[in-house]
Image 1 (tube, rainbow, N blue to C red):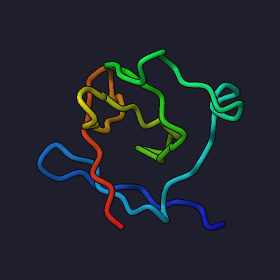
Image 2: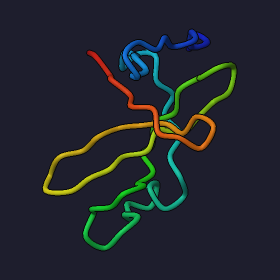
Image 3: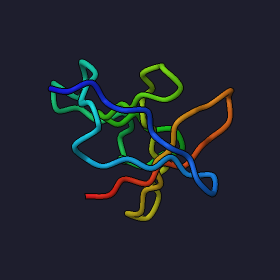
Length: 85
């Protein structure tokens, strides 16, 4: 697997392709468990990570009503992530 490139930011989004993501599941994801009983939440861990400013960062999801928004934390603030195929 190649080392992922640094992702670029435009209009407040971090852009990446699926092939550039790194999959790192937590122990409970490997066991088939969910973070919340309902599956909904404001800061849900995904199994994906990206490299941002030289650091590997977890991608989080906000999920309500079967719609998710992906983001990473940069200096404590949310930066939205756009993943293209």
